[in-house]
Image (cartoon, rainbow, N blue to C red; front, side, top):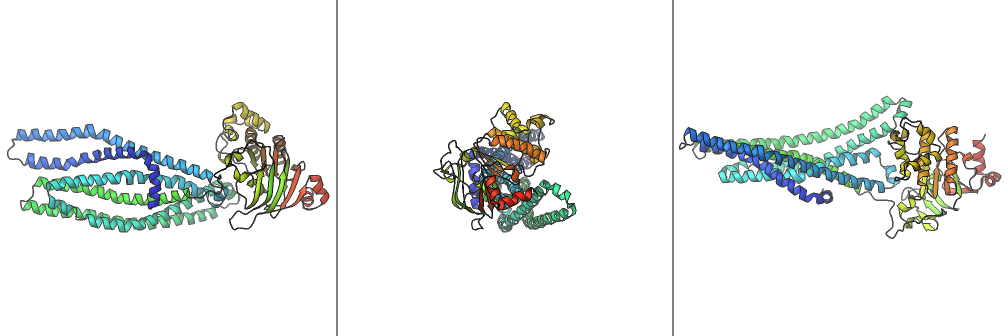
Length: 581
């Protein structure tokens, strides 16, 4: 816990003076009501119980004290209350903003391997739910706890000036209170962490199922999915009840202690009044001060529960922040200058896991500037893995990948990816306008450039027919568009980027023949005079390639042009014959 708090305080540090100001204002806010018990004592002992004041003088004194107190409450208290609430919320929101900004920056640097092994819902839960839970550490741990402690100290200080023995009786329950909090809330943190993980599992399950609801409906799996959701939700319920049960025990013990303590005070003070050792006004004031002392104590009990949740969430947030980067720039990495487009694989081996089975085994080939190079073969052979190494989505295990003679591990990742355009089989569109999705290729492009890119991608015509043209929102993952339309928008953003190196990973394999023809025309224009690497499922789309590599079981088994490979009558010939029977 100490490590998490220490890291969290780094986000708090820029706002330390605002927090201090909030504490000062808060102390004023909580100190003002502490005058009420003293007012009771003054009214009872010095005004009502006075034998030296006439009725007129006593009435005048009563209105003087009550009127003055009302002025304080009406004039001083409202602005103090406003600024205390405003600054407390302002600081907590700024800190949460900074943490989420830092987390999002961190998430963008994590490799694809991390995302392939981690559910999206789990990540979202930590960035949204867990970060939000840490607000309690700011609001309670850095502010309210200290304000409650200050309130208790001020109240105890005033009580000591009134009657020391009675004050000691008031504080007799404090040691029992401290022990019970320490005993109960240590385990509560563990239970809270388990509850948070179970909630993240529910969120992850929902995220996946909502994204794939079409599959559930197409297979009529609603009943099966309901049972599975009930299991996941039931696990969360179990963890939540464990947390609630222990929390209830804590409150039962602690609140009993804080409720018994006032009875001791009332009994002792009543005895002293009966025996003439204490005034009625002092007794009434002490009973009022009990509430002022034990209300903060009860809030501290609630604070312990909230802080426990906050600490558990804090651990989960920083656990995510500690995820290591697989792909990083070397200390002496240099920016990649504008490239000609020569690609070389030099005896490259690769495995997705550190000690896992090799997916690529000794791959070597060279693509000259401006050439179109195609990779074909059965699914799972390693084709997509080869092209994924070029933008450093993963790093090679052995060997080297070079661009224009530069080992890509020696150059800055951003400068490398800036010069690569990628079109995937399932191109992702974001729930934004068509224009915004195309602008991802070049965020500062003009409207004219966007339209020109869409025209080149054979997308302009259908975009104009959309309800709001280029401003039409495409829905999550482009759900409002057909597969061919999504793909043409994806190609348009690569046209806009205009990179010297192009990677096409089965860009047309999931499309109908009409869409494929349109997109194939666009891709041929896009590939003109730039180095292009194509992963192809339909061999008819790559017969024009300068070089074709047949990849099987992580190795290059054949290479040559379409004509050369057909003459050889090997693996490529067999694949081509199967597709054209």
